[in-house]
Figure (cartoon, helix red, strand yellow):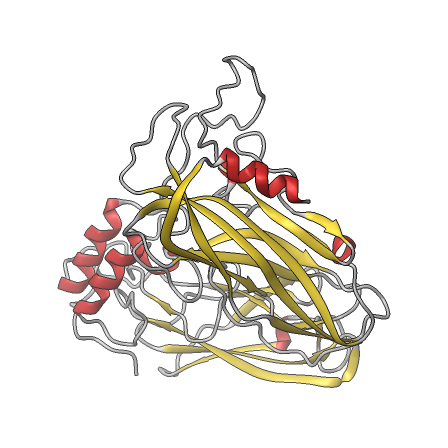
Length: 409
C-alpha cells in the first residue's frame, strides 16, 4: 500500500512545502439515513484554503474508514462503489490522462486506502521514449481545488443485517499542489509542493430497516435541476419579449430519504402533491414521473409565479412501513437577479455573480450555474452578465420591470 503514495509523490515531483492546506470532506447528498440493500450517495469533496501561493491541486489521496457504533462491521471494499466525478473535472487525475493505482482506492481489511490520483506533472509523453502509456495528458488542469471540488463520487450500500449506526471518516489525507506562478504547456514538467492534508468531521450514518420519509436537502455540487431544495430562489430572466412572463421553473425533481407511496398504499401519483404560493395563483400538478418512489419529477401546468414563494406539498407514506407518514413541504422563490439568494435584489448580487463565475467562491448548495445562468441557455457565457445587468436595470427585453430593489414577500 505504501508504494502508491511514494510513487505518486515522486510523480508529482515535490520540491518544497506549500503553505496551503487541503481539506477533504465526506458529503452524503441524499442524507444520512440508509436502508440495507439500498444505495446511499457518497462523495468526497475537497478545497484548498488559499490560492495565493499555488496554482491548484495535482495529487490527492484519502483513506475511508467505517467504525460501527452499533451493528456489525461493514466491509467498505464491497459496500462502496465510487470513482471520479461524472462531470469529468478530475479526469486528468485518472488513467490514462493521469496516474492512479486505483482511483477508487484499494480495500484493506474493512477499509479503503489511498483513493485518488495525480496529474501528469512529469511531462510524460506516450509518443516519446520510454513510451509509457500513462500519464498521458498533454496539458494539465490548473486551479483544481481553489473552490469546492468533488474528488470521488458514488454510493455506499450497507448489506443485509447491518442495522446500526456507523461513523464514516476520512484519514491520511495527502495532497500536492502546483508551485505558484507557472505556465501551462504541452507535456511540461512542473514544480510541485506538498500541501498539508486535513479531514473534516466524520459523518454518522443511521442504518435501519426503514426510515421515516423526508425531503432530501440540497448539497454542494448537486444541481437544482437534479434535485430542488428548500429555499432556492430562481434568479433567471422571466421573459423572452420583455412583456409576457413566459419563463420560469415549470417542473421540479425532488428526492426523498425513503421511497414513498400514496397515503392509501397505492403507487405514488400526482394526487400526493399540491402546489400553492404566496400570490394565491399557483400552477397545478400536471403529472409526475418516478422509477422508484424516491426520486420524483413533478410537472406543473405552468411556470411558478413571478416574485412569489411557491410551496411544494407532499402527503404519503413510506413504502417499507405504512405507519411512517410524510406530510411535508419545501419552498422555492422566483426573483430575477437575486443571485445571492437573500430575497432581495441589491448590489451584492453582482458581487456574488462575479465570485461564482470566476471561481472565487462556490454556493453552499447546488452549482454555480444554478444562480448565474440568467439567460437560461444551460451554459455559463458572457451573455449571462449582460442579461443580469438588463434585469437589474429593467431593460426590455428581457426584463418586464426594474428588478433592482425588488424583494420576495
